[in-house]
Image 1 (cartoon, rainbow, N blue to C red):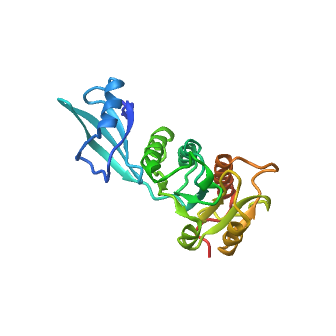
Image 2 (spheres, rainbow, N blue to C red):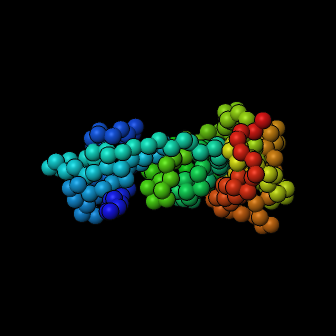
Image 3 (cartoon, helix red, strand yellow):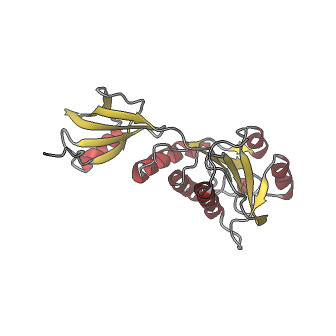
Length: 250
């Protein structure tokens, strides 16, 4: 008796969902160029992701200069538990690195915060860089096999960020003098506040603590802000995996 095996996927590409079996999806030019460079041909098996939980298997259809994907099967992956980052909007390139790596670590939202020290960085992340950050997140989704990319928004003032926090979440601020991360339930939502180069000012820290953020130490030493952001997500993921409980916080 022969055993049917799944076709080998030639490439993973981003496409706008939602996906549905039998539907033909026109690929965006950037993705089409990627397939042309790789010489992916007619009928090749593709994996489609929309970075919003949609995943599909498809076959490449080439019509002249237009590349499309005919969906064979589709599924929708539930969103991961909340893992939001409020990060001082420091150096642009380092912030973009945060976005890429935070996608791999299942961040759900990345909010660049315009703090006093961040505003002094000439190369700081600004609103015109958001689209580039979104593209970085999509590329990371394709590379790491995740179904969801984090939302990335334009920089906001710290006070505004603290007023728009998701409800029913544990809140932590990275602080070298803080305590270890407390236990988390498997699906418990978490929001981290990470300072920029130079850290938060004392008035900013006062506002952060007043919003319910507990200081947590990520290392015995002072970390660069992009290192701190990724360390925060990593220990959050580990704490959730180690939890014997599941579900949302009471």
